[in-house]
Length: 597
Figure 1 (cartoon, rainbow, N blue to C red):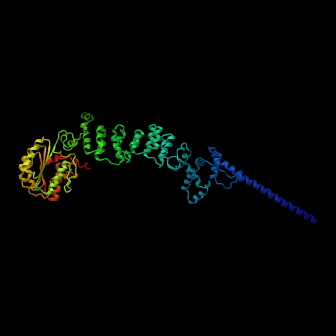
Figure 2: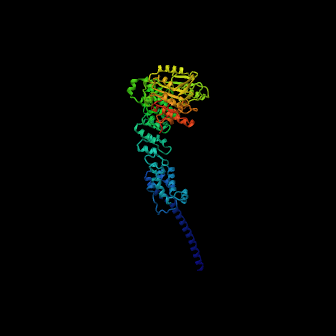
Figure 3: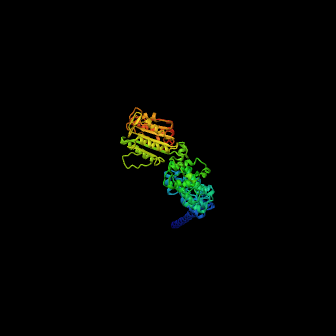
């Protein structure tokens, strides 16, 4: 009995062990089957559920799966747990990623970093997870944001209808503006080089507008993209629809980033203006040489001038003083009147040949440009005159004759240059031993025969003086006797300068209605190196003495400057008669500068 129980107990124990093993095998088989289902079939099913909306949006299953593998967290998930599909912005982001995964991920990283802290950034660099709280915000910004601030969302830049001409990362101002203007994409692609700097300048905007308005040819468009050099001149020329070669020709005019009115006029009339004028203007621009005052006036009135006059003016490459004055003179007349006068008249700056330009006589000296005002001079100084005075007198003579021929470096010179000097043969010399009273009378006799009542005579008298008298080489002569001889000269104006001691006493003897008398000192003063004549012409060249600001010093203005200088240096008090006539009289045409502002 006991043995039988023992046997049954052993049998039961064996069976129990075998059942346990069987159970364990079954359990292991079940677990393996479930694990296979969960790890393989379950995950695939979950992925299919997740990507189904992406596939419906148009992406292939392969593209959708690759997107899911890149961005979905791959933690264990039971089949019965919620498996939320991609939706909304995630689907749009998938489209962006499919189109350009590098830019899409750069955008995601950019927006993720701008909305996260350092710890989450470290998490991101490991792997982007759907479970991270920043995911939704980053995706939303990556889709709807505007990373390059061009007014077009990132999504439209990568996936929209104009994605082939847009860039999601760099600004597209030129492209955006061109799209707004409905410019064709083929042309827009040609203009991409315009926005290499990420900006749209005014000229680039104008080019787009001009392409639309001028129905630009393929050749023109190619030239614009490849060879066009933008500046104010070329842009304006483009607006005027000038040919490519003419635009390139006028390019230097805008080299200073400014287009003046006269340069604009050239572009407007480049095919009508004389080539020499256009070439001259371009050369000025190339060499960065600004316009002189004379040139500025000339270019502003070039539209009123005849081609032959323009060509004559610019024959030597610059606008001279007399050409500037003649330009001013011509602008006083209408074109029909000038056409009647003819080319020779138009080109002549001194119609009466008297050494004063037409414009000077009209606007400054108020004389008749058709009536000659010849100028004559008598230089009279005695042999015992100080060497310094002789040198100064010779300097004045050379100045008036425009002939600084002296080779002696000790001889003083006057640096100014009048428009025209006294003509050869119109200057009489009574110097040293030749300064006799008889010779003086002979000069007066000869000169009286040459005057016609419209001429100007300058009489420079220097020597040792006494009260109402002055020394000639052959004796002392009274100012009254000299005045009687001068009365033979029927001139428009007679200007007398007396450089001698007590010369103020000469004024009462020499003065008359048609004479201007200048004396180097008062009637009771000695002249200590007075130098009135030299100082007079020196003052004539000083702009500060041009009191009426007309660009020239009259006899009165020149004398006033000389008197101020002599009074401060030598305490002499130079005297002047007939101030009214002196104020109206100009001995020479010597320009001293533009009006002061």
